[in-house]
Image 1 (cartoon, helix red, strand yellow):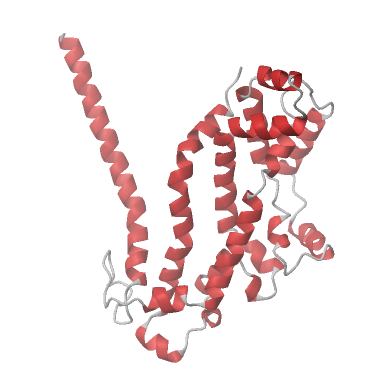
Image 2 (cartoon, rainbow, N blue to C red):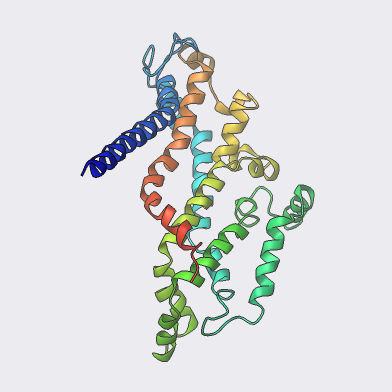
Length: 296
């Protein structure tokens, strides 16, 4: 009994320590976001070190007029949403992963292993920036949304994740039963593999969303007009290059706002979609990674 009490006490102490540590980490992650939000609601009277977690000289001008009301910002936000729509609207990797799944499948693809190694090779050895730029340019994709969609459309890492998921998590008997009932391969794909693979697809969707949402370099090299910039490229020109001409801030507004305030407002609004989406996808995230790594 004494030993059981000791074990319970140590377990309770361990649990308290874990919750305390996780709470501290969560607070440290939230504080920068709260600070950015406070800066975005602060006016020109607020000097850089004055604003902590609460706005100083409260104003909505930075958020409402120069961010939500900024045509260039809204256009770049729309461009980013369009890229995400095309990347998420069709499960590209799953179409490749299905034919090259487990050799023990009912109808294995004869050259599946060869194609798998081809994808792995592209993951390890890349053509490089200049050849990629030349291909995109010669195909006439510059200054179009397709320059941001097609080159990174299929990720070798996501493909490997899905192939392993199909190998370990989709029973062979399901496919055999469907074939006996007269289902074709497209029906099996849509009715069996995709519904079962929701955790894996949600996981790679999260990877894809974060990658494209944060990808600023492609927009800079493939787009010559700021109207075609995705949001991350637009913010990079403002925050890193300090090119405020694209913010279209007039002299009268600058009297009431600091450039830091407008930048903070745009950073927070740019981060908001990922913050909203992640809690809904997070429950699939660990499950999708772990299931794809299991062995039969």
